[in-house]
Image 1: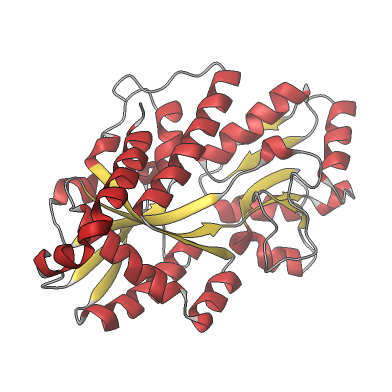
Image 2 (image 1 turned 60 degrees about the vertical axis):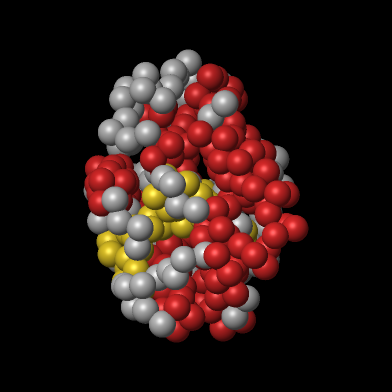
Length: 328
């Protein structure tokens, strides 16, 4: 059983047992927060998840009567923030970031500097919309057109993505479809975006928030979104499944995680406060504007979503002949 599956089972069991004594549980809960709360992000300022974190932090601060501070610690494929969070042993710090960090890590690294049991899901917040894009110089308007071009010219076209999870997804698609394209590694998403616009990079998967200015300027051709459902902010853009490539589907789940041992009652209370914040129409509209689909959920729902993604990534890793990290 994966740590995520364990989370899901535990959360559902707690919910079933807790219902008869909900009022008693509320009365017995210790006061929290009693001081400033910190939300630690593995992403830089300006990312979609960062924008969402700051909007929610403002709402939670007003609700809790304590300051809620967002701290960015990008780098090291998320390890800097994850290990910093776990080692803090601070019950007033939470990790806010993409679930794909955890679901892809075991297949991208031989050993991990953390255990998935070191943190627990608290609240599902949003899903970052990831877009599949092409260089305008290809004159391709769909995923199928790019696929056909690549098949007709083996090894002549190239591709890149911005996260480990989408790396695995695109690579598995190319393998199963018998398409030969050259992978180009990038550390800087801005450089990748420039190369797409200038025709040096042919296929690029990245958060829509990153590529939107170039798409709107006509310097990048967006082919589809990788979300499982159409994005409300782009009603005329198909999902990859609608375009005929469901194997490219990826939901960029973003949520809150707590320290191992955080009481379930507290996790539920925080999740309810997050749901209340997300119910604000103005806040939800700002999230959509930052290419975040609002998908609120409690600990059990978030754990189940993570487990589903973990299983999907595990299947993709099997296709690619990859084994999970030895310490997971």
